[in-house]
Image (cartoon, rainbow, N blue to C red; front, side, top):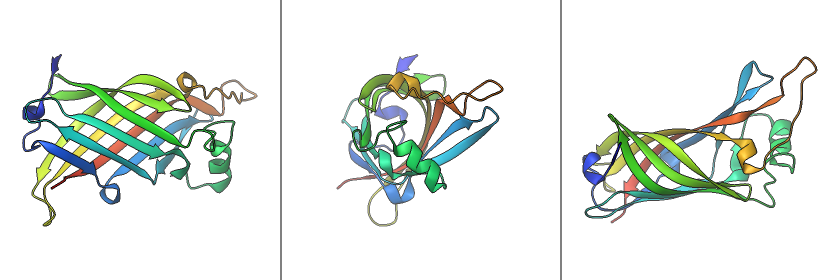
Length: 185
């Protein structure tokens, strides 16, 4: 694997690129009852991609943890409680990149996620979708990224066993990001 630089992202010019939350989506899924998945998304998030003139892009992002929805108010209330996310005490999840590398034709964004007061290293598999001149407000870039977080790594360790074996909520949470970022003037 090699370090990736801005040249690997054709058209991603130097400067600050800001995530457009209106044209971006942050989603998650987690195993439920061992047989299906609960899916949801976060409605409030922000972030930037800093591209130096001759170096590796860096990314920072913040998600308002209480802005998620799964489409079920009762479940969402439970997940916001101290049993899971404890949103009153830990209102945000943050990400800060620590490196970007290539793996064949793919990109891996290394970074640190802080959730529930715990910081852990993560790897995001990233697909660069290119740059478009935009609609009169400057160029926009598109990215898709995925990672899997283990909730227990972040101190979210509620166990709700099922009578026949297994648990109500799985440990692994898949996070999927579809990001559109606009270059700042």
